[in-house]
Image (tube, rainbow, N blue to C red):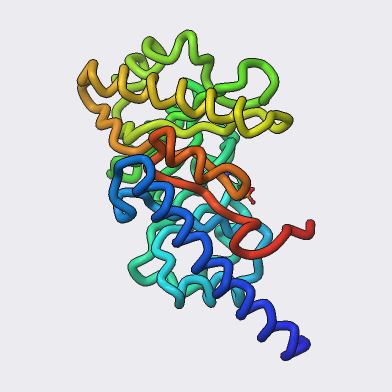
Length: 240
Ligand SMILES: *Cc1c(COP(=O)(O)O)cnc(C)c1O
């Protein structure tokens, strides 16, 4: 390993971290909220443990991985003391068994089927798994997530499942949209979030609204996001 390159990348991560923290705080204040009310999730997929640990040493206390296998193979190398771990993005039903109990939250629960499987495995393990429900805010353009038009009834149906607790919503806007369109999606999400919260459904707490990634986290915060998921702006562009 080239030491100079590692040092350079450590330095870049430090600078990026400061910039993102600053942008989050600014957007929060602009939106009439407190900077500490917005959680900053570092999305660590494809990133080497060496660099993830460097980010953790700066004060990151929440990470997100979107592949079960990758998370399980990396985590022993990570300094995860006091760090919250989430599985983000689409989860296949046949992977549920491996991940339940290994992370603090499963974000991106996008079907009743997968929610039931998480509940079943959690009950077997004697735990309750916190989950976020993923909404397909862009309609059919993006692949995963629940239909917004049926969100209320689907959340109600999921709230009956034992072994899980719904903590909020997560959304990924469609890929090919501009900032203004994204803001509209985010604002629609916030409305849905408030609507469901107001219904005070048993077993549903609606305290987290996870939206905003590297390119649009500031807009997401302005529209009510409580958790942003930032990968490439922190660690650099991903190389697969
Ligand atoms: C990869 C990923 C992110 C982070 O994306 P960036 O644009 O790199 O910040 C956020 N959320 C999910 C679900 C992801 O898979």
